[in-house]
Length: 251
Ligand code: CIR
Image (cartoon, rainbow, N blue to C red):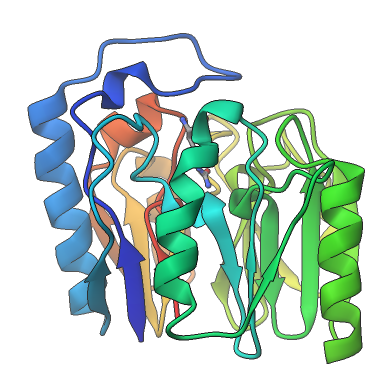
């Protein structure tokens, strides 16, 4: 498995924020935490493909938002935040060496963080970043390939995957404060601890579950259920409204 990743910009503290207010980001710590994240990806079996740095793009480390990579093809996003549109080209260039490409076009907008993929099922969050046209374009690219693609309106948090993420072949971790479990009735749903509504973003790589140590109650709950967690400190990314899925595209 290849993980496309990008380094942290020196302007990381100027990142976009939508539902969070700005709190000081420690850049040195962020860079150290990112190195540990890359190590966790390698431990989980990934070869890293490091994209060219984009020092002037504060959010450039969050490569997940730039594309949805499936076995058959990759869909290149058109990010909802105008400040993030210059991040697309380098991701498109890299992915085109691995996958056939389709592109989301104006007026569509779509962030990869709004797309949850489990087997032949895709859930798309309609959010401040992903609009109806972005959803419809993704739908039209994927339905002919046998995917079932449906939309869920999500206004509670930045991205759909801030509220629900894949933790096993048919299992999701979900924050009931942010998204209704009924949308995922075909799956086994594990809920975050009620005191940690922002704890639903986990990254499943092969059988490794990379998870922030910043949500200890939920970490304990999912460990007790038998999941084996690879914990990383993600405090600075969390202040930037990111999670563990945001930092890579898995191919
Ligand atoms: C943004 O607002 O775009 C970034 N500060 C955070 C993006 C996080 N990406 C993700 O959840 N997929």
